[in-house]
Image 1 (tube, helix red, strand yellow):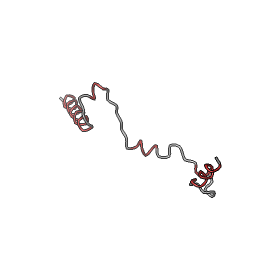
Image 2: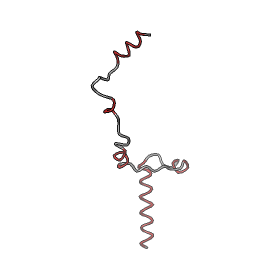
Image 3: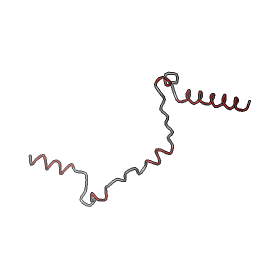
Image 4: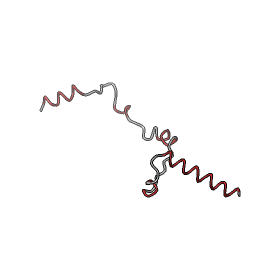
Length: 74
C-alpha cells in the first residue's frame, strides 16, 4: 500500500505554492452571458410533430403574425 500512496503523490499536479483557498470557483460567473443569447421555447409533442427544425417554426410564426396584422388593419 505504501507504493500506491507514493505513486499518487508523484502524479499530483497541484504545486505547494498554489494554495487551495485561491482555487475556489465563483458560482454563476458566466450565467448571464449564457442567458443573454438564449430564448428557448419548448413545444408540446403534438405541435413538434409538424416542425422539423427552427426555421420551419419561425416561418410559421411569421406567417401567423402577418395574418393577424392584416386582420387588425382591415
